[in-house]
Length: 509
Image (tube, rainbow, N blue to C red; front, side, top):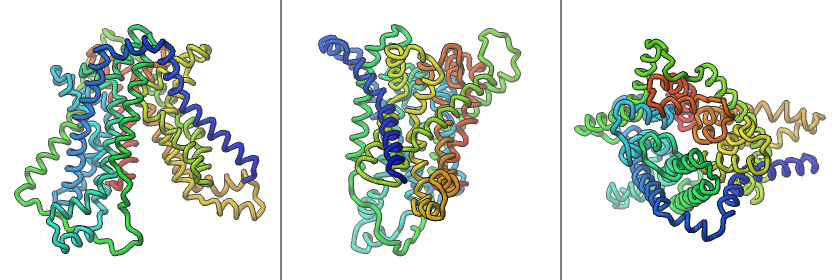
């Protein structure tokens, strides 16, 4: 690549990293604009302590529950002689197709008394445990049995052999899944609002909607940001740096399945109960309310936005976000694939920081930025699409990296040596090889944007309804029948994402 082109790509990557970090800087500057005394007076209020306690307790309850459920289910499916293992593999990953706030709508519509910490922990555990189950199951499915047998041959007990050989292999997958669960909990709004369990994210939305006070909202967002960074640091320490892979292919041997014997009915019942809570109840409840919607005459008691229009708005905004995220991710992914240095890795990782923050924080930052400096584009579709892009750009970045890895630079150089120009070499050699990964990354961004709630509530232009906001407005008025079509459509749109994640984890059937 010519030097001028490299400088242009580097400048573009720096600009993208700056844009993704901008919300954090805006929130920090807005929150700290008041005097230190005023900041301390607000943050030291008993209500802030209550929000902190609620948030931490929810994380401490739900994350261990997801770990136990995810690791236990993965072990039963992959390492035992459980019947119909293929069916369980799909059924235990399928809850990802149901957005968590749609699941909470289903549960609260059939069990109105389900609220508080218990209800929030039940719904979030059922919705998020697949983040642990899928990576752990993928490891267990392909785990080599030789280390365990070697440990047993050296005199270790079965538990000691498992502790020393299997657990270290599972730790990165389990800690990564737990990190995803914790970050989703910190960002969650819909479930917790329906369950009347207030955390920092719900308080930020209330602060904005009730008092339109961006300074206090920014202070809450700063505390939430610190919690996210604490979770990221804790997961890094928990994951450790020990090497768990081996050099060379060696002789890979699958472990013999553990015979459940008389425990088989109990294991089947336990997994069935998990599937009923996480998948059957939400889907059948949405289906029941959808049937009621189709068979009930429209009384216009609560006029709702057209399903066709809201679906069109969601899809068009999601496609725009997918295109922008893919374009913005390309410079960083290209630099990292062609020149893997500390500087290029820093540019890539910078785009991940803001995406680990809740949508409410990004939305609040974009509002503060546009109201203060760019009022002309306040509540415009561009700001909403940019907010989606900042939140979901790592999904495009990771896919682009995989696609560029499939197109080594030597192929482009060979095309150049045959007389093809830089643009022609890219179009005829590199692009065909990386196109599947580009489309996969774009699809991941689009589907996530189509069901995003909190940033959409804050940034959507006046008069614009998406599936998520229309569903939220209906469910907020306890109009379960009116909310059902939007919920069903979101599940339908989320299904491709679930299929992609199942394929990535090796579960195709």
